Image 1 (cartoon, rainbow, N blue to C red):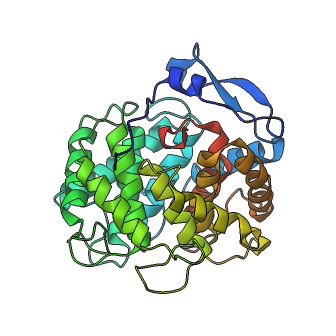
Image 2: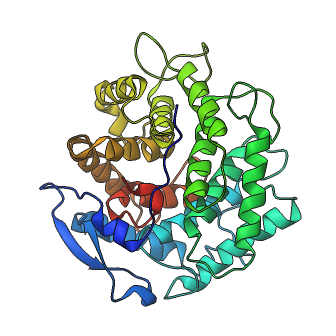
Length: 353
């Protein structure tokens, strides 16, 4: 089983990537980075409503008092997760740390994450927290996506230490769990680490093929043989929409786009009742963050059938001040809403095909 090859993250690669078709007409837009004003990047144009929602959402995150003085976003519950999601929301639209109108707040967010790792021997999550490794994975993802953009000299060291923690925490079956230690595992936590490792590998951090191969095997054991959906753990629980979206995305990240299990998972997602697009659907942001990426990676026809529905729902959920509510706070909901809406931009390397 081969690990997924590295994807080029240059502007040239973005331009060469295949683009969406008639539902989302092509456009040529300029990167937000001041240093890239002469570089034209091919992207698919979002609807005016989606564009406006993203712009309002970023303006909300940049409002005085929304970002904390230490550079974090969110409250005391899961500040690392909210900060990571908030940072990626700005990078999604092409904004660069240290440059332009949002550069300073992005630098502050990066410094917050790096300082967290410095103070915790490389661990980026909240200690003794049920979501500790989930936060850690999100932070690794955010820092990896910032690789090559941030001028913070400490980023490289922080990222390497954080990745090493993920590698050492993988258990014998190939998965991960709540804490940075190789004990039991579940699909949700495993998927987060797979996504983080994939992004880190693309940033140039060494990730052994064996780690990805073991993770792939674990994810496959979570698939329900009858339905093609994915369970929380091997043989445990019913297959569901959120878990299947996560399982499919992780297999794609592991280089298994054409694997039978991936295709069966995609079929499960597409056949799932349309209540999945309802704005009150449980685990809404978690589910659709993975689902929309899965459909984008699956191909143009699947993405075109999926994206307009989820985009319409998200636009309708936005508050007057530009924010979105979320299961783990307003910043969490706002950041993830932007990340789902903005997949067609493809400025984030992880959103490339």
